[in-house]
Length: 309
Image (cartoon, rainbow, N blue to C red; front, side, top):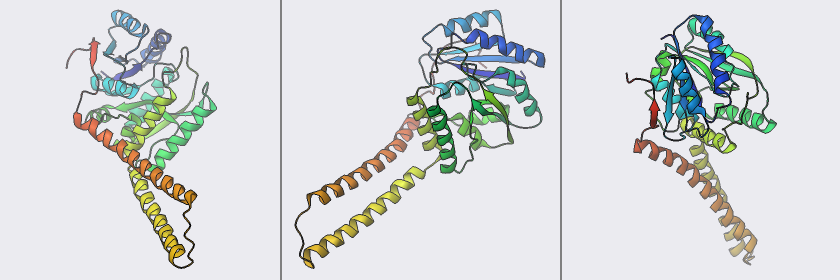
């Protein structure tokens, strides 16, 4: 098997048939052995039925059906666990990642690059808020971590078999695929493209899911928030010590010691707020450690047509 395409699917019934046709048109002229691995991430529409229909018509179509929705990053990981190709393309199912770019990605992979990611020049059909927050997050994450992360990219890329095998050795529960691939290293390059609008339907990536992904990325690849909590503790302690000296000076030197309700409340709220922030940051890290210690399965497969290796 030369090429595998992993496609996470969540309520993409309106796009699956068009996506399949465009994949066929893009890959068949390449004259290589390939497979299409659809991962149904707990869809509630007709996505799974359409994928099964395609699998009956085409032996190159393979699928995994989850027992529930586990999330896009987990769906990608499951697909990577099952693929057989020497090169693997990760492709969203909403047609915002153009399948026609696969041949160009494959050509760059043949030149010896283990990772070739697609970098967006423009992003059509997305709100100013979504584009600006995405730009801010990736640039912030790059500054927070020691691992340089490519900006203006998603999961659309081609990776080599040795990158896939390395990813399979990274069993953390909070998956952030693009960060893991950047951390792995190996020769990497990019291709630029104009990202189109969704073909049909609505995005399943809500702002809450994007915030969760951002938290996973930050806590998985940076301990700077913990350092900030420590530094803020020292700063607040220093301020509190100065306030204590001023209080003693007012009490015993200038004899102005009328209790001040405002200053007292400000001090209490300030100290309490910093403490709660620090506890919250520490709690985020501890909760992620706890989830990994439980060692639960990353996903549960309800049905598949992929034979056991």
